[in-house]
Length: 124
Image (cartoon, rainbow, N blue to C red; front, side, top):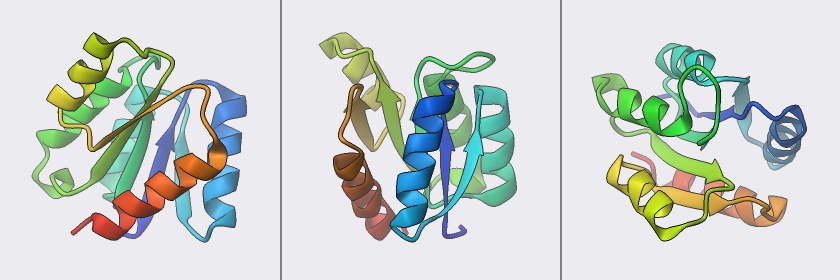
């Protein structure tokens, strides 16, 4: 497992906001704009933490998470889902798929960064 944080979101503004904040906090970040790219980067970099938007084209964040959980090298990657889908059933679906955290949009960049740090520090 590397010390990289993977961030995947199809909204360029959110992707820039999250990656800039995490880099400012000292994280090494790789970024993806869709689920297929996110999965490829996850397999290439074996990130310590992945922040995945649920509503991405190609593969959505839950599909990426499910695929990651099926790859032995990625089994210890901590995954945060980031989404505007805030209903209890959506949250449950994310946790059932193996998410370690679920952050609802809109979000505070400082709170998101703190949660990433918590996941990062807790990753094996």
